[in-house]
Image 1 (cartoon, one colour):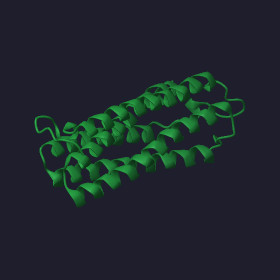
Image 2 (cartoon, rainbow, N blue to C red):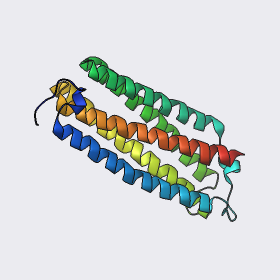
Image 3 (cartoon, rainbow, N blue to C red):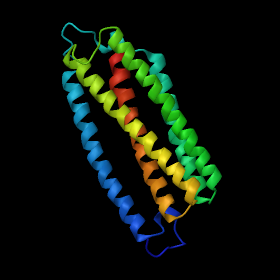
Length: 199
């Protein structure tokens, strides 16, 4: 585990944690490339609707606003979890982590409803190039949220069982970076896919 440095936040208290956090930033760089490619493909194919519907015809503002509100709120609650972790409060850390994951589950539920709605109104994956890249982009983000829910649940169990230490703190902080990244990606989706598509 390495020598613990008590003069820095718990997640940065060992050399191993520092290396893991740096490695995760590198991983996020690869994730940026993934979503960058999806966005570039979307902007290329957005007008290729064929006989299928356009974004203005299928996008609904209410589900999108709900998704945006709950996901951005979850970004705030994961920040509170990190703050509680640094204060050494195991109970508060777990509590804010649980709230974060519950908000993530609400987001995912609304997104599943959206997907069903799109397919129901004739905007399925194979209808046009536009619907294909739209559902691929949204689905990739939704898959990342799903993985985050599983990952976060595992970390909550570890904190509950082992308490707050350099290992669990490092894992929690890395998870928070991942969750904030998903929120940033969603802001781009909200702004450049939904809002632009509704105009």
